[in-house]
Amino acid sequence: MTKEPARILVVGGGYVGMYTALRLQRRLKKELRRARDGNGGVEITVLGPEPYMTYQPFLPEAAAGSISPRHVVVPLRRVLPHCRVLVGEAKAVDHARRVVTAETPATGEAGAGPVELPYDELVLAPGSVSRALPVPGLADHGIGFKTIEEAIGLRNHVLEQLDIASSTRDPGIRAAALTFVFVGGGYAGVEALAELEDMARYACRYYHNIRPRDQKWILVEAADRILPEVGGALGRYAVRELRGRNIDVRLRTRLESCANRVAVLSDGSRHPCRTLVWTAGVKPHPVLAATDLPRDDRGRLRCTARLRVEGTEHVWAAGDAAAVPDLAAEDAPRTGGVGDGEGEPARMCAPNAQHALRQARVLADNLVASLRGEELGEYRHALAGSVASLGLHKGVAHVYGRKLKGYPAWWLHRMYHLNRMPTANRKTRILAEWTLAGLFKREIVSLGSLEHPRAEFELAAGTDRRPRGS
Image (cartoon, rainbow, N blue to C red):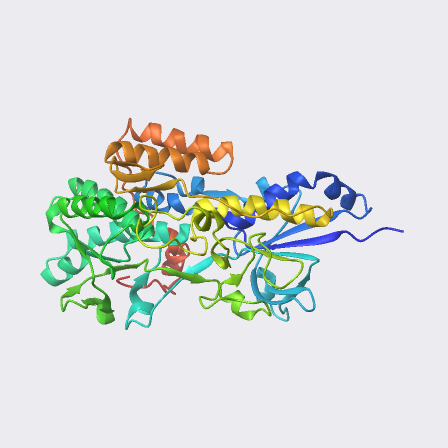
């Protein structure tokens, strides 16, 4: 008689999901082999909305054209050959029945419904989604910046605005096309704005009637500083650096409305614009609300330091979806420096890449220990610091108590993230692209047609549905 293998289901193909599955397949080689032979063991299934993992810290450089979009993503099936990779979206978790309800590409076909995926051990790492506030016009005109598709779409959009401004005689249309508003002063907003402003300023040399000073870049932040992770001093330096490039940084300011493509700010100013990028925070994935598992007041799963969901068995979580106690901060309270440098340390781990990578390792090791009846370990990690890019050859960094700015910080930012990029294949390709970028001019081609690949054929067939003036 054949023995049924233990079923491990990893929900989420992002940073935590991929690294957890990668470590599980390395630690459970014998068990995976027994499952293939029909002699018990384990089976690992990874459920994610895309067949790849996106390394989000490189999205700004991909948007600016410094890195090819293909090299910012890691194919899950290539790095997880011993796991079953299932493309789909988790919709609900019924832990009482040990099943996850999911929608896959096949469920969109006529007569197909959601599928139920049974499990013995569940790893919940669906990540987060953009936190969109009820701002009038935001849903209609806002652009997010969490996926590779959004990054490339934004690049094409910015270059398209330069084309519009160059080809119109209407001063209102031209001004709106050359106004770019970014809401959110964290990593995503600051790095995206800085890289794209660099790209757009460089692109102006190829337009006969557009100068860099004609562009209007605005960064809106509700707090009194930007990049709080690098500390107050470096945050103030970043503001001076951006303002020195004629970027309008507005602190203690909120977006009140963007209806009719007019950004109305809380300071009373109005800015007609055709580009509004929303990076003002994230929230846990909606699937967490469709579970019978305990959550905190922010919607994250309440977890123990062993990365088990609190009060349950056989459910594990990490990353943005999990509220994990920060034992290192409790043991050694910060008195300044890395992080915000002020006040008491947070009781929960910050939702960043440093914690995500290390939590994935501990989670996988604990899951293996649980299967083998061994003792579980606790997650404990003190942050080494923070790095941020402010465009080509510009950056800020606060690492191991040392503060860097300008070129050294930018170089450290690149080296740090290159080291964290999964697979030698992607590391080599990115390094080659950076090397070639130093020898040749920046690429400023817009491939907006990628977003509507059938538009040309529909035009020829007389059924053109391309959006106008997008």
